[in-house]
Image (cartoon, rainbow, N blue to C red; front, side, top):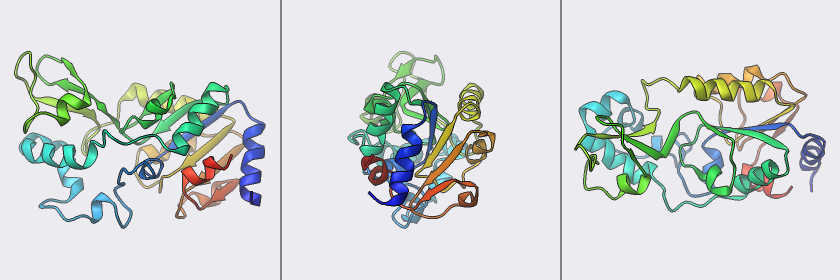
Amino acid sequence: MDDKIRQLKEIIDNTDNLVFFGGAGVSTESGIPDFRSTDGLYSMKYKYPPETIVSHTFFVRRTEEFYEFYKDKMMALDAKPNKAHEKLAQWEREGKCKAIVTQNIDGLHQLAGSKTVYELHGSIHRNYCTKCGKFFDAHYVKNSEGVPVCDACGGLIKPDVVLYEEGLDNQTVSNAINAIRNADVLIIGGTSLVVYPAAGMIDYFKGRHLILINKSSTSRDNQADLVINDSIGEVLGQL
């Protein structure tokens, strides 16, 4: 165990008020592509750029093409939690981890057993009819032919994910900010901290230890007490 991992272990051993703030890098080790790395969705070639496809305007105007991309690239229903998800769930059971704030929409934290998870960008596992409000799970959407429609009223189904041009859910944001503000230790993992307003939430942290774990450096490294440039699963898996 190297010095940084040992230092991280000591901080975690001595807290019972930890919050984890995570991004796409938490899920890449489960086989889910991120957006910005060399192998990410932004680097792949499509008829339209991915950031255009996952916008509100595109969803409304080109719904069928939106769902082709969404089902193919964003609904990884076979993905399994990795060491990071499992360690965080363990810490919650032990009373250490008070909340997870995630930018991911895959539901892997809950699948690993975490209960208090604030999903800033929504979830592929929640889908609603835009006409009558009926709920549908991810399998219904994934297995539908073309554009998924409500089996009750025939209305268009929309995933409960925050598309470009859409605002974050106010209650989720409030819960996330409160968790971060009241934390003793904040671990930021698997995120480049370039997506706002989510990245700006860490400014509410006033606790003792800010820890950054990410493969590449971020603009906030100079604010952290501890920076580890490695994959989040590898790091947490050593604890």
